[in-house]
Length: 155
Image 1 (cartoon, rainbow, N blue to C red):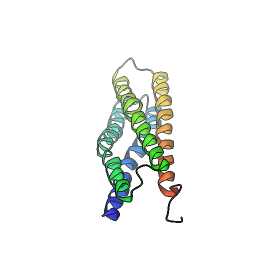
Image 2: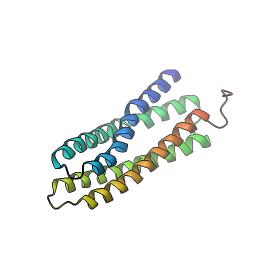
Image 3: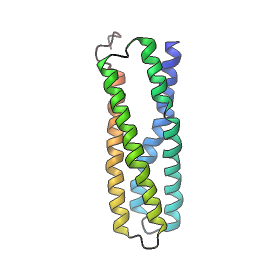
Image 4: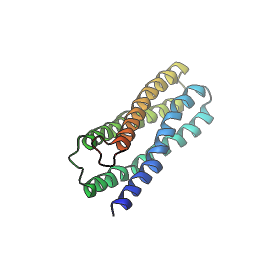
């Protein structure tokens, strides 16, 4: 059962977190490059934002399967797992509190005829920073999951 749970956890991480990471990373650059092109910007940005929203919702499966796997392995109290849980919660917070609302604001701004190129660049810069933090948090969690300090696998 542990192998099945671990497989589901890894698949959920790849299929849910991967698209969010890529779409969120593409959003600021797309916003910056196409700040003057209202129609093309809106369509592309809306698609990237929709990917982030939908896959963020699907992403709840990652910690669910992760906790189930950790429970079956008996490692719920291990420091590396607790650290991973905290970092995962931080990444979710960055996504929910900074990235998704920032993308919403960018979409609203690009719809406004009064929106300026400098506003788009400022919004893109903030989103790029938040997305970078999000990506570093997930990369750190991934490394912790692979290294697992104190692991009995010998790897």
